[in-house]
Amino acid sequence: MRTSHPNIGPKPYNTEEATFDGLVQRLVEKALLNVSEPLIETVVERVITRKINDNADHPMEIEEAALLVKKSKQTLYNYCSQGKIPFHKSGSRNIFFRKELIEWLRSNS
Image 1 (cartoon, rainbow, N blue to C red):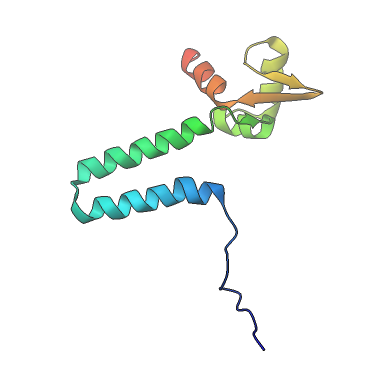
Image 2: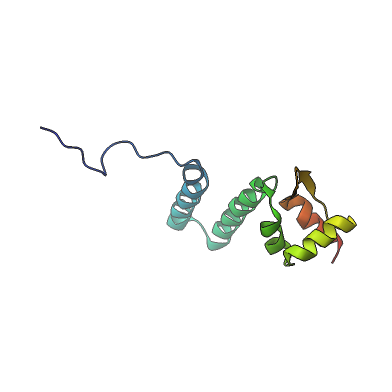
């Protein structure tokens, strides 16, 4: 009678791990073998920048937006009602996009 071992067989597919984390790990391993440190830093920086840009269109609710702009939720609600910050309505919720908030932060500093 055969019994299955929990570590044998197909593993669940994790898209983020297979793409981003796996890519970073492979790049770092290859880079450490025979590439200069400045080039390693450049590659890692580009991968991180790409990951951040991939999240630029990810919608955020007010809690996450408040953390990003380092303001309280109430301040963000006030900014929304005064038209001072970019946001979108989804029913009764205010939705924010990282890219728009970063542009807003840059233009208001």
